[in-house]
Structures are given as C-alpha cells and as structure tokens.
Length: 395
Image 1: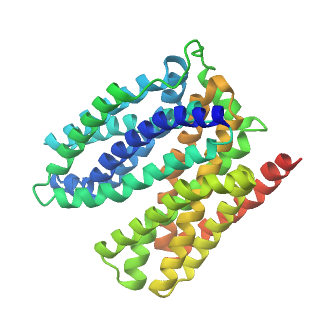
Image 2 (image 1 turned 30 degrees about the vertical axis):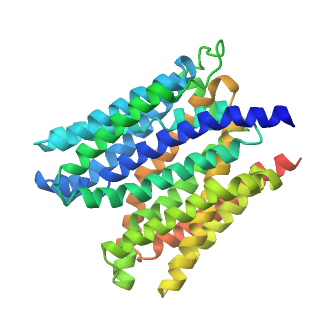
C-alpha cells in the first residue's frame, strides 16, 4: 500500500506539470482562434481564403503529428515539447506583426506544425501513468484542452478591445512563459536507456492502420471525430437559423459544452474505467454522443439544447479519453509517440474534412442534417466497437 502511494506521488508532479503546459498552450491557441478571421479580413482576405487559413492548421497537424510522435520516441518527449512551444511563441508573434496575407499564412503554417505536438503530450502521459491510470491521464489531457478552449476565447475577446494585434502578442508572451516554465520544471518522461530507434514511418503507419489490435481503434477515432466536428462547425449556424442566437449566446453555449467535456474527461472517466474498463466506457461514450447529437438535431427550445449539450459534452469526453487510452495500451512500448501521432493525424484529417461535409449538408440538405449524420456515424461506431473491441476484450 505504501509503495503504491509513493508511486502515485512520483507520478503526480510530472502529471501536474504536463497538464499546466497543455493548459497554457491551449489558452494561447484559444486566444487566437476567434480573432484570427477578423485579423485576416484586415488584410483583405475573402471568406474562402479565411476558410483555407483555418484549415491550414489542421492540415499541418495531419502531416506533422506522426513526425513529432516518432521523434519523441527517439529523442524523448521533453525536447519535442520545448521546440513546439518555441514554434507557438514565434508564430503568434508573426501573426501580430503581419502586414500581408502571405505572412499570415506562413505564421499559421508554423502554428499548425507546432500544434501537432499533441501526440508527444499524450505519449508523455503514457510514460508516467500505470495501465490502470492511463484512461484517467488521457482524460486529464483532454480536460486541459477543454479548459484552454474555455478560457482562451474569452481572454482573446477582452484583449482585442485594447487593439486588434494585442491578443496575438499576449499569446506569444504566454507561449514564451510556458517555454521557460517547461524548460525549468518539466522532467523527461522516458527512463534513461529506454530511448530506442523508433519504427520506420511507413511501418508505424501501416501497423496503426492495419493491425488487428490498433486499426479498429484508430478508425473509430477518425469517424467519431468526423461526426463531432460536424456539430462544432455548424452549431453556431443552426443556433442563428433556428433560435436567432448571437455570438455572445453561442460563445456561452460552446463554453457549456467545454465544461461538460472537462467534467467527463477530468472527473468521471477515471472512476468509471476503474470499475468497468476502457472498452465499456468507450462504448457508453459513443452511445451518449449519438444520443446527444440526435437530441440537439430535434431541439426546439433552450432547455432541450442545454440537455443535449450536457449529454454530448460528458459522453464525448468519456469516449475520446477511453479511445486514447486503448490506443496507447495497444501500441508497442517503443512506438507510443509514433502510434499516437498517427491517431492524432487521422483525427486531424477528420477535422479538415468534417466541417466541409457538414457545411454542404447544412446548406443543401437541411440545417439539422450535420447533426443527424453525426448521430448515425456515432451509432455505427457503437456497432463496430461492440464487435471489434468490446467482444474481444471480454473474451
């Protein structure tokens, strides 16, 4: 009992530090997110160019997340995290001083490359947690992301009252502070002598996308993300179309979803996984995600909207945290970063394609069509998870 308590204390300090790093990083990202389109308009960007500018970030994650993950397997997690924090600092500063659209695109590309470090942060958590605590650790990383997305946009909106460029300079300073704190305080999570030559890029990708243990989980992550981001991309349009909600109301509703997701990932997932296991919690999370999207599609008043968002936030948080833990468990010990990078890359691909498909469905089919399609895709994920993950785990 005493040994277990001592091991928990040894893990708590690095966990707190990596969570602090992720929260500060995502606050900086959240500051930039709602202001960037308006800043791009300042340079004469069209709506199409703004859309491409937004998609550039996710596209860079698709390309670079596996690379950062594999590099962290070879040189350690800490150097990768420090380099990407430096990239975040420089890119935000470049956006603030940009005087042409070209510089804005270059800065956004650098921002996306730096933001692809998510796999290294997940691999760090995998290094410092036990098998039993893996889902809780991944859930806390997800909750840290949620906190960043809640605090960042509100902070960015307030800073923009000073001047249009102030949010970007503040985000750059925040990333610089984060870099200093991580450099001084964040220890390396890989044990001395554990750094080995990682699997080749194509070998890692082929293993993640085709192996019996990993492939179903990675593809489930892709489809579930595709379904969820369709809601993210069109919910503000639906709120305006159906209820007449303005930006302020939609901001509060998105913050409500973020709080619900943080509750699911940061508080509930560890307790539920300890009792029922990752596979069952993932399936329940996917079921709740499907139900939440279906309720939201049919909602006709604000109380039903809040109920749908509560269900959606909590259960999607459970699903994604449990999925990340299962992928980490199934990955080879010497390829944690690489495999988690492939998973992050496929999720990034879903974040590129999902909003586009959702926009087409909203415009040409029906405003609630993205939510209905998302609910159907989540239900399909439940069937696949039950057959390919839950039953083999029980066996």
